[in-house]
Image 1: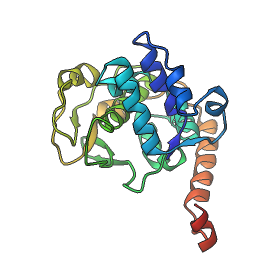
Image 2 (image 1 turned 180 degrees about the horizontal axis):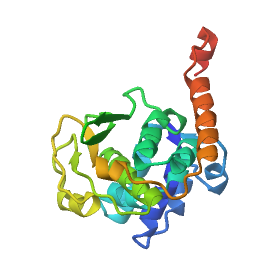
Image 3 (image 1 turned 120 degrees about the horizontal axis):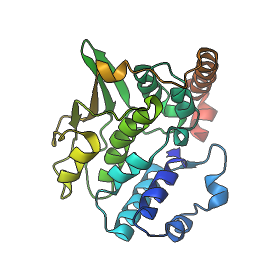
Image 4 (image 1 turned 180 degrees about the vertical axis):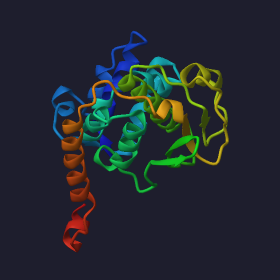
Length: 237
């Protein structure tokens, strides 16, 4: 499941086509009260059906890319607010992947941050097999990472490389405008690569004491989510 915060970027993407998203959201029980509920979650299959409905409503198969470019870090809850207080883009990216369980979980895997001498990969786990119901998920995650990290450092970042696990879709030409580079389709996985120059950029709103406090809160919540549970708790979950 994932935080209902992600529904806001989907709604904004629908509105950008001059289409009212409210009837679609209400069809899925996502009224204003539900979207304002602390800790509210949405199942991933339901989110995929919602996204597919939005694509049909707007006629835009690349809606996921638009969602990513309209997303905000605050929609990722505590993880996003913590990332916004990081000292650099590198630490913000690390936050988004490390604390992903705070805003979304999937038995298929977890996103990850892989650093090397010249940069780093932000990797999103595989959700294959792919179809029109889930292309937008990969698009929105990768585009969202790049847009959100650009937002916190105040500079437009471009990716060094982008890998997409599925074959080139009908809207393949839309990716380069979003990422600044043509993606590699039918790749071994889904990933976004940033250079050290991008990762080293400082975040102007960083406050060291607030950053440490947010990290402590995020770590505590992550520990609570991932601690060893009793059989009764696991069955309930």
